[in-house]
Image (cartoon, rainbow, N blue to C red; front, side, top):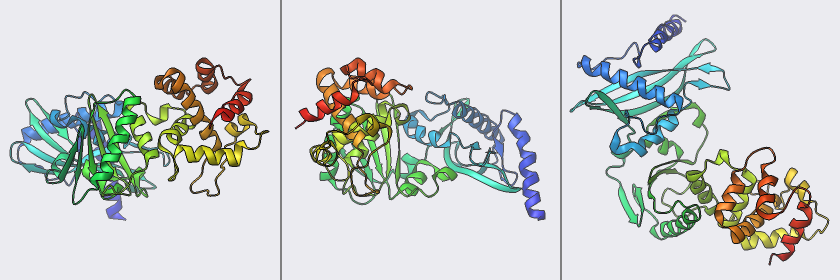
Length: 383
């Protein structure tokens, strides 16, 4: 009990540091001898974390210039670490560890600590490199350093970094598909770097995430970001050697680079994913055929109701096909053919209360009033 209370009092006492312009230090931390560096480092880190907290860090002067995009990934992961909405806890960042190297370089361990149910709690922990640059320190993700000895495969604007082996023929398929989507989204020509990791935990470690409560239990996933003309993808998916890829997921990945997924109408986006990437091993032609057999064959189908109460027309709940997504895929196909993909993106991006019908009527003349009639007509014209 005394030990627990000692830790609690240490955390409470250290919270006073947050009132200064210096990053907080763990009470047990042994600092390197260069005290001048330490003051400057703490001041610089405090400023960077303030920018991360505000969300305005993309052009920060405290990011290592040569690794600006790679470091964006780490800073995006750090965002939100100072609070846990579910547990209603506030966390304070502390430098919990520091290692000094030649040339005023340091590796920091940054932990976000708080108190939960009278016990110490850690919401997240990160590893970040610090380099002295003139009158400040600049910070970087460890990604480049970790992957320095990895193998590479380059094709056009794409470079893949991998540890042991890579299915190059499948990578070429992916690049061809990604280029097609980028061209539609007017995002072509950007430099893309993909880092192949064992799983999501490995991807986290490689960008500098040692632990984050919000990531617990997630086995597969990826980190990606875009800045100016460069895209970074740290892939912790199911295929560490890239023996396969899900075209549906690639649609979401590439869309997210030009329009955040939380800023689009999900039903429209998923319809486009069906259209361009298929789903569960079925291509768009197969999906439409099955949809017409199982759903559209009933001429009395209420398409507005199908939108309001999603209908899974497949037998599996684990791998569903939703009728409304197919309808949106057909509408996207029509809009792109008549007005171009920019209009599809316009429709998809209208997330206001009645935005779906507002944009649809503007682009096609299909409104909430004539929706059932026009959708039945569109389906009947689809081969």
